[in-house]
Amino acid sequence: MTKKDDVLKEFIALPGIGMSKAKLLYKGGFESIKDLKKASVEDMVAIKGVNEKLAKDIHSHFHPDDALDPVIESAMKDEPKRKAEDKSKPKSKAKKTEDKIFMERGLDLYKKGKWGQALQSLKEALRVNPTNENAHMLMGDIYRERGKLERAMESYEVLIEINPKNDEPWVKYGDALMALDRGSEAITCYKKALEINEDNDQARERLMENERIKTYVEGLDETLDGGIPARHIVLVCGRAGSMKSSFCYSILYNLAKQDKMKGVYLTLEQSRSSLQRHMKKLGFDAEGASNLVVNDLDDMVVIDIAHLRKETSITELEGIDWLNSIITQVQNYKKMFGCEVVVLDSLSALYSLTTFKNPRSELFFFFEKLRDLGITVFIITEMFDPEKEIFGTYGVEEFLADSIFHLKTEKTDNRTNLFLGIVKMRETNHGRDYNPLIVDKNGFAIVHD
Amino acid sequence: MDLETEMVTFMQPLFGEMADKTVELQKEKLGIEGKELSYDEYVQLIDSIRAMCKTMAGDAIASKIYEGLKDILDQEQA
Image (cartoon, rainbow over all chains, first blue to last red; front, side):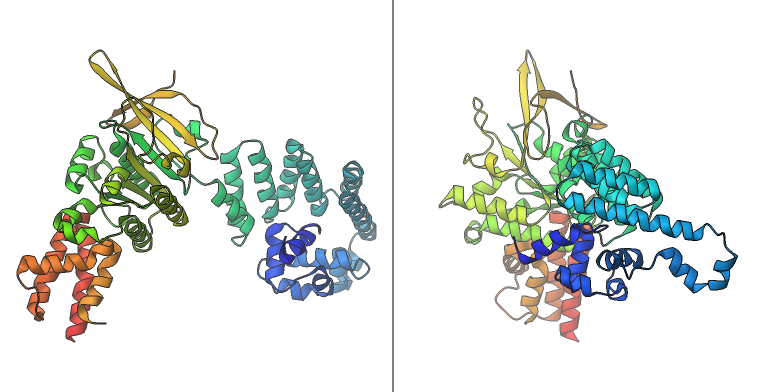
C-alpha cells in the first residue's frame, strides 16, 4: 500500500468523508492528517468539491473547542434578531452539542471495532438531533459493513431526505444495492451522485465498472444483468450460415439507433455493399429509423477492408503486420469517430492474412491491445470442425476473450434451427442453456422454454 | 512535410498501413505514377481516392477524406 493509500484510509475514517472527498483533499495539497488538522475552514473550502459544511465538520472534528455551533454563529451575525427570537434557542444549542458528543463517542467505538456500542451511541445522537447527517452516514456504513444492507439503505435514504444535495449517500446507497444484486437500480444511484457532484470519482468509477452494452436481442439482455459488460472482448462463434454477421450488425445497428452509440463494423471478407444489401433484407436499413443515418459519421460506419485488399496487389500486402494494423486502425477510428463499439468480421479472415511465428503469444498481445483500447469489441469467428465445439483456431481465443456467444445450427428433418448459447461471460450470472434464436423484421429474439 | 506525405498521414486513420499503397495504386490507375504531379493531376488523384473511399466506407467518410485532401492541396498551392 502506498503512502497516499494510507492517508486516504485515514481521511475516510473521518466523519462525512468518503473516498471521493478524501481524494479531493489529498489532491488539494492535504497529504496527511496533520495537514488537515492545521487547515482552516477557508483553506479547505478553496478546494473544488469541498463545501463549507464539510470543511466546518472536519475543522470541528479536530478542534471541538473552537467549533462554533451554527446556531451561535448565526446568532452572532444578527444579535438584535436573536434577542427577538424564541427563548428555546439556547436549549437547541445544548442539544446540538450533546448529539456531537454522542456522535464522537460512536465514531471512537466504531474505530475500535465495537460496532454494537457505536450504533447505540449513534442512535442516542439521533435521538437528540434526528438530522445529524454524520450520525446517519456512519450508521449506514456500520450496517453495510456488517452486511445489514436493508438497514444501511434506510440510513442513506434518511440522509438523502435530509440533504438532497449530498452526493455521498447516493454512492453508498448504490453500493448497498449492488451488493444485493440490484445492479440497474445501483447504476441509477451512481448517476444521481454524479448529477449532484460531477467530480465524484467514486460514482464515476462505479459506473465504469458496471456499465453494460445492450444487445437489443429480445429476451437476452434481461438474462445478462442488463447486457454485455462494456469494454469486453466478445467472440461470436458459429459455423457457416449461423447468422454471426447479422447478429453483430443488429447489435451495432440498434446501439446506434436506440442509444446513439457510435460503432464501426470492420469487414475483412464480405464486401460492404453485399453486407448492406443483406442487412436491408433483414430490416436493418436507414429508412427504418428516422433519426438514424446508418453509414454516416454520426452513428455507425461500415468499413470494407476487403475492398482495400482487393485493390492492392498481393506482393504489397505481404509486408503488412495485419494484427497491429487492425489495432492501429481501430485506435484511429476511436479518435476519428469516437467509436465505442467495434465489430471485426472476421478473425478467420484476419488469420488468412497473417503468418504467425508464435500464434499463442501473438494472439495474447493482440487481445491485450484490443482490451487496452477501452471499447467493446465483437469478433466474429468461424467454427470449422463440425464435430467439435472449438471456439478459435489456435485454442487460446476462448481463454483470451471475456465473453463468448455461440450461434449453433441444428438440423431436424428438412429444417435447420438456430440456437444461441452463452458459453462464457465474465462478471455476469448467466445460464448455460441454448435457447432458440429467431429472426424476423423486428430483429433477433431468443425464446425461453 | 511534403504534400504527398501530408496526404498519406491524413488518410491513415481510415486506410491504416495501406494509405501510402492506396495513393500509389490510384496514381498507377490514372497513369500518373513516377513523376512530379501538376495541380490538375493531384485533383484527379483526390477524386479517384474519393471514389475508392465511397465504396470502402460510404459517402460521408468519402466526403470527409476528399475535403481534407483538397484542403491540404489548396494550402500547398497557396
